Every structure is written in C-alpha cells, then in structure tokens.
Length: 240
Image 1 (tube, rainbow, N blue to C red):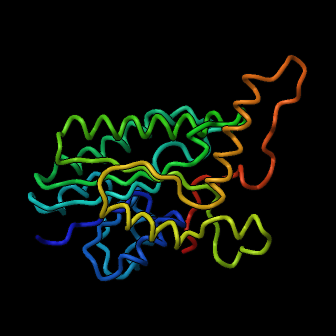
Image 2: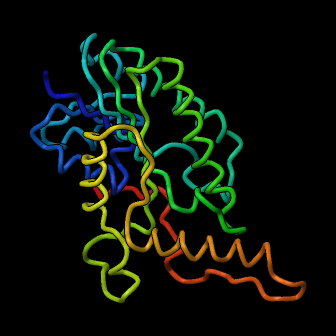
C-alpha cells in the first residue's frame, strides 16, 4: 500500500507550519488561500503548493488522502464580516472537491477547540462556528461513503515553545506537539479526542460549572472560568 498524500488546509497558520515541518520528505499538498500565500509557501521544502481551486487537479485519481484541516471558518467570529458565510461555504466546497477528486480512502482530521464542547457565554460564536464546521465535515463524509472518515481534535491553548514560562503555559500544548498528535490521529480510526492537559482540566471545570448552574439554589454564584486555560488562539498566521 502506497503512503497517503497529506493535504494541509491552513498551511499559513502556526499549526499548519508546524505540521508541514513534520511532514517534510512526504508527499504533501499545501492549499493556499490566494496568490500571496502561494508565493510564501513555495519556499516550504518538499510541499506542492496549489490554490484551493487547483488542488484537486494535482492529485492522482486513486490517491489515498489525509486532509488536515487546520483552519476552517471565520478568523475572528466575534467580529463578523458580511462575507463570513460565503467564505465558509467556499472553504467547505474546496474540501469536498478534494474528496471527490480521488477514489481512494480519505481521512479528514479537523482541528477544533475544547471550547466547542461547552462554550462559555463570551465564546459562543467561536464555539458555534467550530461545531458547525465539524457537522458539515461529517456530512461530506456521509455523502461519500465509508471510504471517507472524520476525526476531530479539541486542543486547548496552543503556544510556541519559547512562550512557556508559568504553570498555565506548561499545561498548554505547543504547536509542534499538536502537529505530532494530528499525524498520530491520522493513522487511527475515526474518533474525537481532547488534546492537552489544559484542555482536559478546562473541560472538567466547565462540566462542574454547568452542573452548579443547573442545581444551584437561586442567588448562588455560578462557578466561572477566568484563567488562561479558557483561552485558545484564533487562527494565527505563521511568520514568513
């Protein structure tokens, strides 16, 4: 069995850049949003670079794919733009075109956020877009049958190694560690997984908060989450 082609959606994000570094030497297609991205990405060793509209055409008709979705949906959903929905639909259409371009197996690995599992009031839009993206990827898989599967990673805060200082930083995952986990998930069966100690702590505290909110007597303060563990970065562009 030949090795799969790794397709990276969002290669200009810091996570996408870390993933490309780990994939060096393998068959990789980096999907650029526009010509400016394509020009920067041509310097990435070993990766074929294609615009979203052209990416299906660089794949063999029977290729097995692993599609790493590092970016999908609005960059800053709390500050919506009129064309957010149109851009989202276009991104989904480009992913489905990749799936349809081959008769081989396709594994979609989507990077969501632990916030999507139980959004706090101030992150409902962010979590909502992540959940919508996950649902739409699942629908793509269903339309194309058993050869297409979806796995979802729910990381917490992702930082650079150089940013690790305090305890909360040490509990957070680095971009390199999450990239390694994505490659590990690509070799497994479809599943959903929380990534990082901080994400697991946050989800446990958030569950406690929801329980308290349900059973508390009237007037009892709600357990709130205000530490750095509740924050995850929106899409971050990689440094050129």
